[in-house]
Image (cartoon, rainbow, N blue to C red; front, top):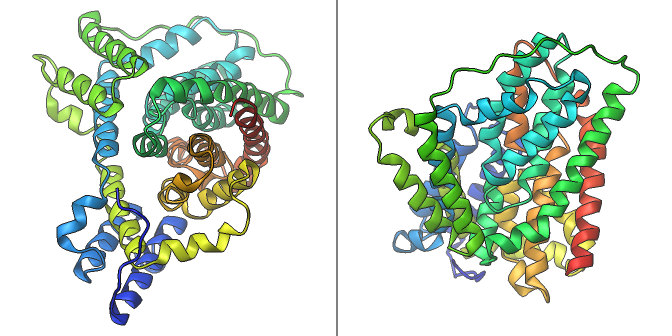
Length: 414
């Protein structure tokens, strides 16, 4: 990775660098460019190409700015989780847990199921799986679906903080920091567990305290499952997670697992490729080059100089700044900017964990705080509409309380 050091640039290139950076981060913040339909991945592509075209990022150095272990880990986990999705692993497990559950315990079951799966797999994909199931089961039990959809979004965000494979920004932090998977889990797993209880408590307080007890419905039928198709993916996933915990580099272990799953006589690889979020991968590549160009032009150092006087060495101040940046420009772009600060901290290990914790938990503040939230809200339409304030009235207390838990825990174990 490139060190944070500006290089001399002509004035026209410097102006171009600022224009590209501001325009790109405007799209990252708003979700699209005003007057155009360009989205975040599109803005990342355009911004990256422009950085190279104006020689802010010299073409020969472009690959130097890209963190390939992060891309390999993200791509490999998408293939692994996509395979599990194709064979019905998630749907069957969730129904196995919930089919005989009293409706009064459905809310915590959804929170903890979403959180558990998101702790080991990419939370965005977990949300894609959970939403149709939650809609189906609430329809069957004659329950209002909104609280349970909010449980999916907030529970998956909280659960994903536990490991470096829980979400894209954790993968980036895990790759750059060199923190081992097991170390990451031991430090942030308790935050995820405590956060899940807070999530359940807030949602219960907001939706369930005045609701009469629901009568148990008849048993749900499990979907047909071909165990012969499930055996190999489960063995591979178990081996991958065991490798993570044993200290094998996550990118290598995930790549080996993904490669093993591609050797098959039953699954069409094209169906698996369709499960890959190519837009997210493109977004990461483009963002690496945009931030690299901003570093070359001195933009990042000037931006970070504005907050250096805030005593970011203090964990509470750093947590607040990360949460603020994450909700202005989204968590992955925020992490890309702030990662340059951490190596200079007196305790970079705790700072990396704080960056992962705050950028993830801050995603629960608003609908646009994380991609997982947007997936849940958009996937539920047109059957259920959840507005900004519907989300914010539970997202705000969940975010504040879980950030406080994470801050106190990291301060205790540092």
